Image (tube, rainbow, N blue to C red; front, side, top):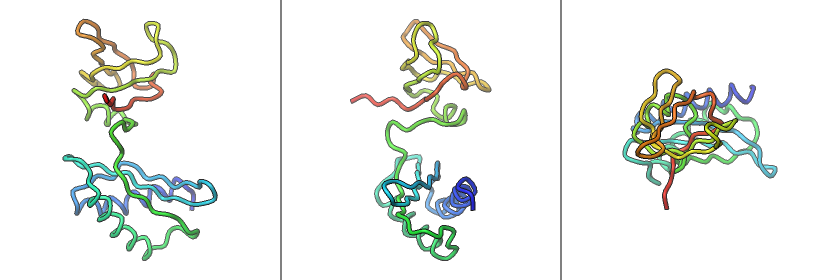
Length: 154
């Protein structure tokens, strides 16, 4: 089975289990690192992801994956939250983050810079409006951004 097909199948299987726990499966990644295979499941929940959420999904998913056995090799299963500075990979992710501070990197300079931090004010189709300062806003097409992630202030 191709990697993309495997990830898609596991995403669906994971989400079926996660639905019962009020969890959203955001991403599935199957990767080989340092000679080991890893199946990573990234989850989110409206009121935040707890360790119990990760353990509960991991336990149930592990049972299901043992039944259907889609991966021939040995692997480590990891279930975790997306993290505080998670990337917003789709325009839907960006639209769901209206009112949130983000860090945006661009392929090419826009108004003299390749990176901006600001609050997402609006999303219309693929056009994103970002509040940079009290006076300045930046409008850009989603496809112009190389990376958009939640901003974390320490």
